[in-house]
Length: 331
Image (cartoon, rainbow, N blue to C red):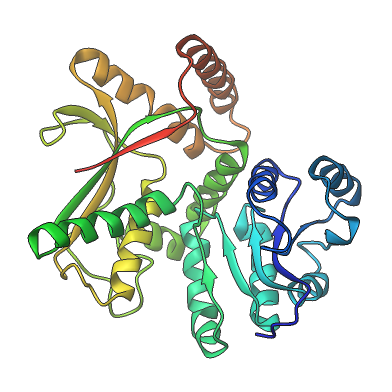
């Protein structure tokens, strides 16, 4: 990659909900002489509003379109890294990956779309290696805490015991908010594709579906699909909506480091819902967003339950005044 590019980083989808948060963080934590970065999107008016809010120079506004590959290539050639928050990625992300590969530009995203990641791996992994660039998926809530949590936990276990843990169970102990609109749309799109494509269903059903070919094996079974009592945590646990992608990312990372923790290493995720009958009920309540995402688009039950669930979540959050944090326990 050439060192004389205009920017170190371009945030693509800067005016969206997540993109705006990324821009705000970078703007508050880095001087421009430390990190030369710019904002990118297709709507010039929205970008100008964001530019004014961030108080950055208008030369740092990049206009392109997800459906216009040439505009994406032109953008990619100006930066060392493109960070994209535009999803669903299966609909809006492939051209950008192609553009980055062609421009020899590093790429990262926050996708949780397993089926799309599989397609990107199959089509671009080898070429990216040949061009010495990086394509890094799932760099957000899914799946950084899981992937780096396992890495850190195993590092500490090895320092203390001289060997790696054979099993890690990740439990989400607390969280504020629900599924964002972008995440909800992405999850719905994954399930829509699964309904009509058997290869997508096969990837989703395989615990090792993102592992390299020839390394899709191990002791793990499909992710939790019901509410059960977990003796290890002494609590009721429920399916974690992000487990379907997080667990596969962790297993792929493990395969890419040649099964450093052992070929029998096991990993799973779930949400802690508490003890007693209230804990069990809370576990069933947590299944509502997963149930909604699996309903067909336009169904009345999906429409009305979505309104009810979102209203109830807002009431509970306001009443409990939960901290703006996500808490994990690695067991």
